[in-house]
Structure formats: C-alpha cells, structure tokens
Length: 213
Ligand SMILES: [Zn+2]
Ligand SMILES: [Zn+2]
Image (cartoon, rainbow, N blue to C red; front, side, top):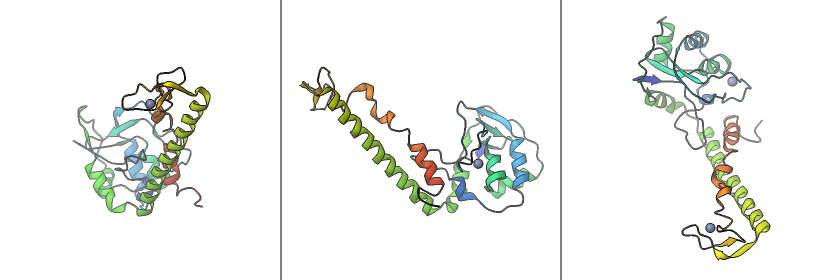
C-alpha cells in the first residue's frame, strides 16, 4: 500500500480532496521537501496533464504519479510547495528531510487516499465549501438555461409534428419529420454538451469567487 499525498479537488462534483488554497502556511522546509518530491520515481503515467489550482499560468504540471516506495504523489506537487507555500503532513515532511533514497514501488501497489483526506479535513475552509456549493448550483442553472435555449431553438427550427416521441416514457410530440421530440433528439446529447463550463466555475470558486478582489 502507498500512502497518497498532494491530490486536490478536480471537479465541482467531487470534493473529497482538499483545495491547495486550504493548506497554505509558512514552513522553512518547503524547498527541501519540494526537491525531495522531484526526486520521486515514476509510478504511473496518465494521458491528461494536470493544471495548477491557483490559476497561476504554470503549464508544466506533469502527467505522472511519483513514488518513493512508501508514498505516492502527483508530479506537479512540488510546484505547489515552491510557488504557493502549500504544506504537507508532518510525517511525510520528516521522511522527506531524513535523506532516505526513493525506491520503486511494486507496480500493483495501489494508492490509499484515506491518510491524506483525514489529515486535510480539519484544515478545510467553510467559505471555500460554500463557494463550491454555489458554483455547483450555478453550473446546474447554466446547464438548464443552455438546454432550454437549445430545445426552444429546435422547436423553432423544425416545429412539432403529428406523432408522439418514441423515447419511452415521453408523451411529447415529436419534431416535424422526426421520431424524437426536442428534448430527446439524440444528436443533442444535452448533458454532455453543457458540462464544459464546470471547470471554469471550479476555478472561479478556488480563486475566491466572482466579484471578489
Ligand atoms: Zn501555480
Ligand atoms: Zn421525447
């Protein structure tokens, strides 16, 4: 088992992980710990690249998990220590500054996130939680608004036909010349299509919300 550290919130719909903004603090050992993090060995590679939750413009956040044989962390974690003064659990800091050499972990070793989640819990911020809850509601509102506009546009464009929509349980009339109503036109793929803005809302929430200085 590898103890995971340094994993941060990545979606409005999953706030199990803390935001790095909640863990900022002074610690004279941050640079040494960041150097230790960079000496980790690649444990797993991903296709997507990570992004800095502080929106600082850093593009090189990496796409790997690194390990020292005991702990596992995202490749971009050292950036948060160096640039944003994000603190890590004391037990890991002690290990990092002890000078121990990193060893590879067995490939099958799975990260265990419970230590990290429990360590971060008492540091979580009520106001950030509130902003994320607000952003989630705004996401739903914007999604519904966009869906309503798309449905209205389809109705205007095609008009209603004479038959019933073939989607099971739907009693609306289909669009003229089609088998589905505007709500169920398969090519609209409504839910997928309107999810694009939720990462932007998460960014806003992490930076203090819209309208904050
Ligand atoms: Zn950054
Ligand atoms: Zn329908």
